[in-house]
Image (cartoon, rainbow, N blue to C red; front, top):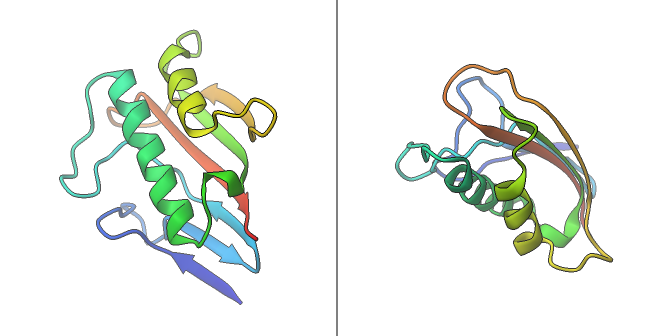
Length: 125
C-alpha cells in the first residue's frame, strides 16, 4: 500500500526515501538544498532557497504530482527574521495568492551547513 518515492541522485544519509505515498497522499522527508547531481550545497540563503524548491518540485513530480498538489509546507530557517529569499522562491513556485499551500516556519537547529530545509504534504489527483 505504501510506496517510497525516490529522485535519482537525491539521497538521505539514513535509509529513508525522499517521500512516501499512500493512495493520493504524499509526505516528504526533510528536503535540503543539496544538489542531486553534485552533492554540493549553495553558500547563501538565496541559493539554498532556489535549490531547495528545485528539489521540492523534483520530489512531488516523482510522486506523480505538481507543485499545485502541495497542500502544506513546513520550513526550518537558521534565521527566522530573514525570509526574503524564501518568500521570493515561494511566490515563484506558487504565484497565485488565491491558491497557495499553507506554510509554517520554525527555527532550524540541525547539523551541517543548511540554512533552510523543508518538508511537504501533497494531495494528488
